[in-house]
Length: 430
Image (cartoon, rainbow, N blue to C red; front, side):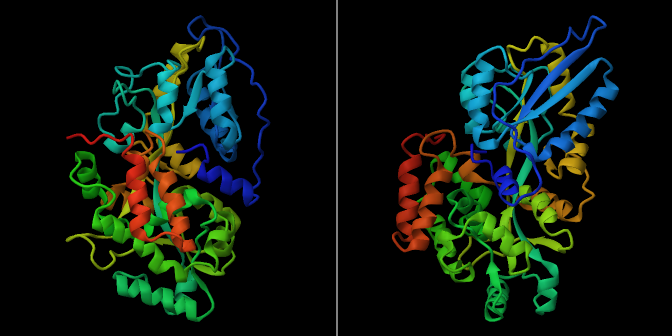
């Protein structure tokens, strides 16, 4: 994901009880080699400040299975993490196992020669190829990291509010619009969108209009060069957001995403379009809220056979620092991160959809999201394919949708500028 990591910003701003660690120069690994009967301390760096307790629990289990190994988990503020990590990897004070970004965000770290290739050490052949792609070098195709989680776009809804107002989960676009109208007439904000934060808007676009432009089939067409973002179906999908603006908070471009989340968690909005990464934050904000999720039905004009879809992407990977004095021990830890044992703990303790296949989910909401992703998932296209250059697809569409809501651009202009920007560096496969 980008340096503006979604979940940490939300959790910090909503006062989820997390501690932001100071971005001071961290200490290096300590201890002797793991093969000499001594002890080894492996440092693991991350931007997941809010998950510190969960990771400490997870790594305690690893330590129990690997006597003589201690794992020191050090999280840093997400907005400062990229700089801290680059400095650490360039010197001798870096982590043994860094959490690294995915897709385009990984490439600078790969190009610096800071990571050990994992080919032949870790087998991800049975994993989702869109997820594994986020852990590879774009130029050489080598595997440099193990994906942590699959994130998904999600339309959360308040089950009690739906029931109290006689609204059923919609299965058609007309029913979806009727539900929005019902809430609007009762003084309830139907869709809690925070458009002040432009990074949220490509996600909102995927949730509300992904089926309008065609999901996976559109991705294949763009990759091959058969279509681009000026395609009528994509333009129409951007127009869907303008159509739905009246169901969002007034002056939506002045509403921060944290305000939108509070609007929803406090019972003043019926639905919240966000990500699976928001689940734990929403549950902490209102533990009594009966959360549900559903996929938005295809809008009129959607490609033939279109159904509701859940867009997914890889979020964060773990790698081995090429300068680690404990590379063998670090490699063992990263290998373990590809196992079902680790993946199950990510699901249970971190409350994320694990990248490891075959993991089960005890949380009913997370189970539903994971099920949607498995059964009708599509790529979060502007992240999985269009963050390898500058300007990135997500940046362009985020700013473009803001201008759409402000009335300074229409859907055609937004789509045309998106296409013009990414085509300065994107080269179709054909």
